[in-house]
Length: 89
Image (cartoon, rainbow, N blue to C red):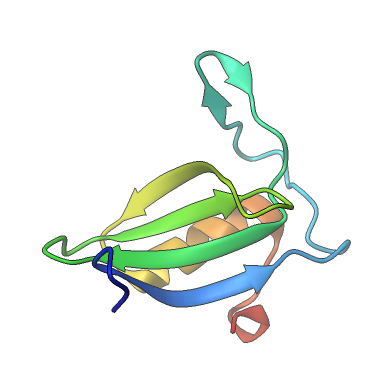
């Protein structure tokens, strides 16, 4: 665990073959956000769920989705970007 009470379970640096499938559209304040450069599956202390967090090229968080299991978070990433379980670190 980090000092902030979060544990990075898995991460993936998106490659050119991990293109947006168009299955989802993430917005912040009504504006469509840029495609992420990296995805992380994170769990926070005291929270049973898993967050699929999108990060830009310089490591800033863009947006996230919440899931009941790590498997569901991985499935969401596959739904959005065509990632496969073997791609994750």
